[in-house]
Amino acid sequence: MANSTIAKETTRPEINLVDHAVTLVIVCLVGLIMNTVGPAIPLADGFVGMIVIYLISMVGLILTRFSPFYMPSVAWISLVGIVATLPWTPGSEWIVAQAKSVNFLALATPALAYAGFAIAKKEIEVAKHSGWKLIVIACLVFFGTYAGSVLVAEGILRLQGI
Image (cartoon, rainbow, N blue to C red; front, side, top):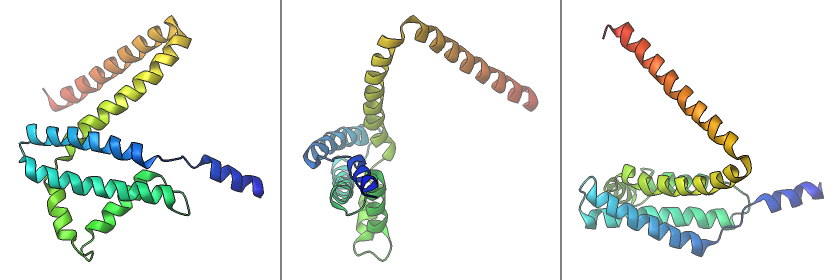
């Protein structure tokens, strides 16, 4: 019984709130630029909406760090966002109005770029150990995926009479 308690405590990830806060500021700034340039939402509107989203994210991270039981940070952040926008929560109309001024597709750009960098770093390490065989397998997978997509598209187009 004691071993399972220790295992649960050691598997809980340590969250450095300062690092996360700084990273979120950078992501929010990039997202704000993308929000202003892409969908042409006024900077002031997007700025307030981004602050609301930042605060929801930070409250979720604080709950992840200090809650007596573990849930992933994405679950806590989602829960805070849901509770903050429930109709009977005081100020929820204002929060929803501010969040509407943020184009979430604009926020996806920096998030996906970061994920791409993180995956690329891991893939480079895998490629160093795998060698040339990985390149051959990757090319075969890419070709197979492309050929499969072509066959499916061709079949659907023929069924439609195009």
